[in-house]
Image (cartoon, rainbow, N blue to C red; front, side):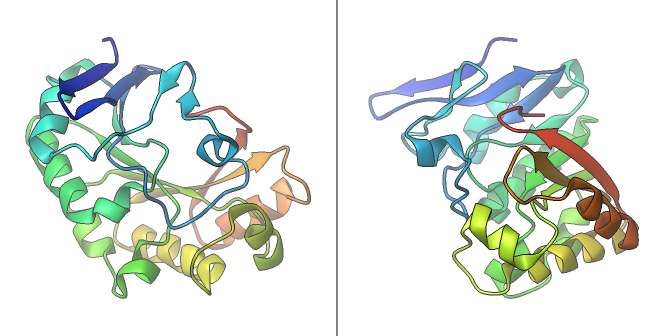
Length: 209
């Protein structure tokens, strides 16, 4: 599959792109964090040769059209240069339709949906999401704030609580941290993940997966 662009007079953007046998969905550029290491905060929208700048957010129908037959992929992954749960209703609608066709659904998230929405959204996610990959990014609040620059107070603890709740709902949860960021203790991050009963994945800077 080639990356799928939607084109009309006001919209030409990549909204579905293949990597590692998966189909990645780019549904928003909005985010709850302002990570210092994010390409878009370093004047680039390119990820592994894909330009992920969105000129507007795609509709549910446009995303489903871009995916086509989900059976071609191991997973459908919500992951662009924004936080997919910012468009929670659209995410749930897209995932629901793809699940009907047998897709496995993963969401790569900052884990701040509950904090942002002011309610527990994990029950709704558990209905359609198989796996959550949550960007933990640091072993403590101070280091987390330094690298992710959250827009809301209490983000670090809220992210960990979101991971715990999602795990309790039956979603396969993996916390991730990036090797190469100053002050990030990968071993300490893994210990925290294990204490919550969830998996841990050690990521490399600038590698999407």
